[in-house]
Length: 519
Image 1 (cartoon, rainbow, N blue to C red):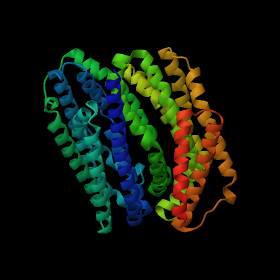
Image 2: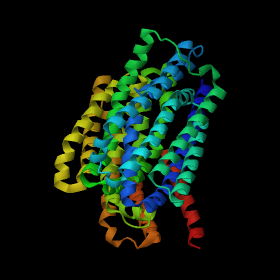
Image 3: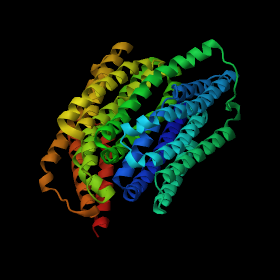
């Protein structure tokens, strides 16, 4: 039993590290390429690019929840005798929907393009934007074809292959993007490069899945009613959540573009992209934890899930709460460090959204538990409430605070809806809420105090023009915030003896490196 648990733990660690490494590569590729794209396209054309990619990203998320449902089916099949013909047909259903979605999207765009162009204020870039959209649509189709192959790799926990493909295609995409814009290419060439990268990723993922698991090759065939209802019922509940989440994510861009033009939308999107660094490690940790939790819950039952839930919340809160505070106080110099000059809307977007996104990600642990127990519908009310609140708050706050009202509405909606989900999840599953509140409040309180203390000292902290001055400001502000938060958590006895020992080891290593850095 101990050996089996050790094997599972080793695999989980390996999967988490591989996906985290791939996501870091992807993030770095974006961080390197986006400033080049922004510089060569200019604010207006870059804003149009942001709006088009956002629009197609919303479309790509409407997969009927088959992505999550098929991962669950494949993971469950691994605990049984082996994959069945029904599972292969379900994977074929995912492949079919990817193609159907592309056709439906083309028809909708062709019919509504004049209205879309007017709504998003595309102006003289309307023609180029249309051709770019067609290329991006090919990327959406490639993503749909990729869906069953990705589900196979995730379901059998072959995250090493998945991570390698993601990392390689991210670097390739960044190289193509930089080459295209440096050679004078505009929106159309940029979209063609993105579509080509997506097609290459699909081919590589399909090859990796087919090479390792030919018995899970998708096939077309009739499915029995109970199988369709099982997968469809689960998938549609996930779809409501993911579709509504897409509205939350992309609504800001589209509203800013419609009210203030593409340039403002593009500048704000730069801040959102930087903020996604905060979501990087926990987001992929949660992705990797889901199929592993499905398997462990089969033998561990409710008791194991309860322990898993509180432990995951604890570690997410310890990481995310101080990181969110650090992002808030260092938002402006972080943007200057990245782009080489200030972009006010980007920095403000980071400062406003960081704490809301941090809280939302912390409660991703409850989302995993709900899905493992076969109750993804628990997310539905919370996500729909978030969308309703976002839409209801956006226009009043926009009229009151201008462009800053848009991310403010999103932040308030996310916080209020996440609080509702926390209460609803515990009530629906019969779990007491006090243990998780006792787990949450110390890191959140420590991060709040640390952020306020650092903000009060900003006038006395180093800063300066250019990237060097911005780097110094980011390092000082973020380091001070994290140090304050860690000191409060250690002093308050929140961290265990082993965790304090590891923290002291890291501190000693940092001090050992300091003299070499100063020389």
